[in-house]
Length: 78
Image 1 (cartoon, one colour):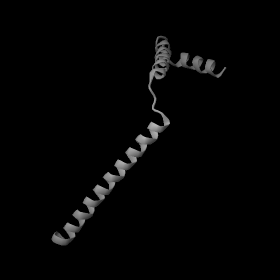
Image 2 (cartoon, one colour):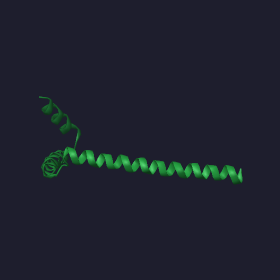
Image 3 (cartoon, one colour):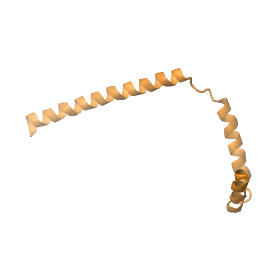
Image 4 (cartoon, one colour):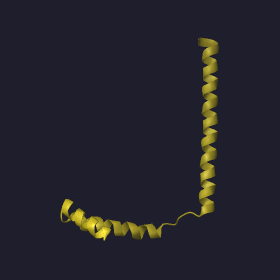
């Protein structure tokens, strides 16, 4: 019932030729999503840990550079 009401409202708001295009697009999206090779839970966990690890390493590197440049500025310039 709710889908019918939504479609009826959309028909009133959109140009007549636009609604069939939207419906076709959404059907094609559904078909394409079925073709996707989704990663397993184990792969997702592995990749997430890699991203977290690399992010942590970059944060430490940039923090070290910030500390070094702050120390150099305070020591020699300021």
